[in-house]
Length: 225
Image (cartoon, rainbow, N blue to C red; front, side, top):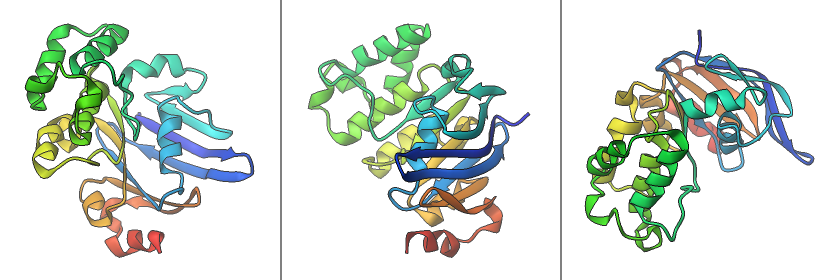
């Protein structure tokens, strides 16, 4: 069974079409990379899969559960990393992770493990508002994978990260994690290198949908012109 199944998925904001007729399947452990200019519908797609938005037409299934009707059954199996880090700025990184750990019933040992992997131990007790954007992004990665989700939804996950930080988080959110992933990207060449399936959106409509091996960076780059 595919981990993600979309059929005719659509969403609008008033009269503006955000997504139209998106249909695809993504197998367990595979990576879908979604390309497109700003406003193309990439973040809307992720927010629907994260159960934060309702589709206006079509169907979406994650791990065999239909959204939004069975959203409650998949939230514990999905990790979401958006442009908003979803962290409380007045709390420390450790306090934020403890809060999310309680929501998911995760042992506190997992927090220490993630802080170590991402090199955050020395700053773990500083308020998030005092951290650089790169450090905040690392904390947000920890939050997204804290509950060991089967599916990761990643909106430009390497934004604000220097090369050293990227190396730290890759085992958690990269292909090596073994998780099923949906990743948005503005980088045609780099995005295709980690994709099994490529979806290119323009104004919410699929213009490229194919196994990534059959797509060129020039085809993806044309979406941005």
